[in-house]
Figure 1: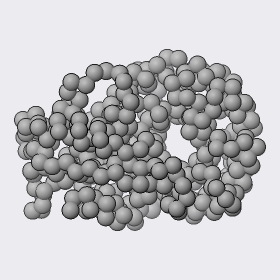
Figure 2 (figure 1 turned 90 degrees about the vertical axis):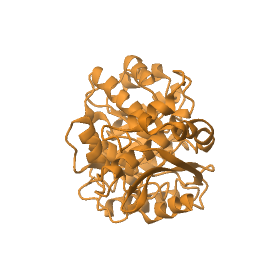
Figure 3 (figure 1 turned 120 degrees about the vertical axis):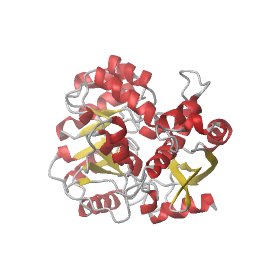
Figure 4 (figure 1 turned 30 degrees about the horizontal axis):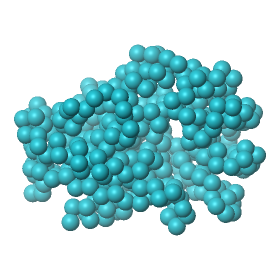
Length: 386
């Protein structure tokens, strides 16, 4: 199997269900990789995108990584059957000549293409990705996993009412755990937001808060202390992701779970986090994003590093809140996955007909990732291929 075309398009996404509310011009890059293999009379096309939260990566994809895939012969890409594609070998072609370190956001460009490669490989095998991935790694797949609904960004007006409506919508959809944002305003306002959401939930262990790496060291400690009485499910991304000293200080004084890793992109960074960040493997949560960590090969390296440092697979709950992260969590038997039911549409969330039951859901059983099960994504990828 050879790659005969790579299409790239950067599209806007919003943190809010209403895309008219400003989100800092956030966008993501959709990719489509067309192969020379055919299924049901049509070329096998792998679809992917650069996940959520890091902006689009079209330049790096077009100028640096897609040409390497296009130049690779079938003997460099083929799997064991010879007429398929091996995403691990394709990843090696993309990374040929790249030096260690200096990750910048090239890791996101590689991850977007890697997602599409896994979609193509699973489609060629006529398997949903989570089962294809589990088979490839020699482990059982989980048919359903816990998911939590993420959102709760601060609204520019009527924030409390709109936040309450949003969380009620999550609960009515079958989610049992939610996550909201803190750090965009004074701590007193954030505590008010926490309290109105807790009034809708059975207890603090059903609510996580995400600071999106906002706080400086002293502020992070003060906020951690203010959150203590609520006994939240976790306090996420408290400070600069590479400030391991502050992570360790917070872990010393905050006994409840912390969640980290969304903004770390390599096994080397993960190793330093485990060595210097003071984290506790018996309670803390790891949020590395598979698409932001140089794709699945990089993510699997991080899982191996974590396991070597005493962490279980159940500590991992991949960032992203979309179908790819759901497949990865189910295929690897991880502790759960984020969901973005209203944010970052149409990329956030799962299949259009998916049903969350008791806070759990299974990936679609369509071949590949199943982006075709979402009408809004179908429109984007069709326009990309036109």
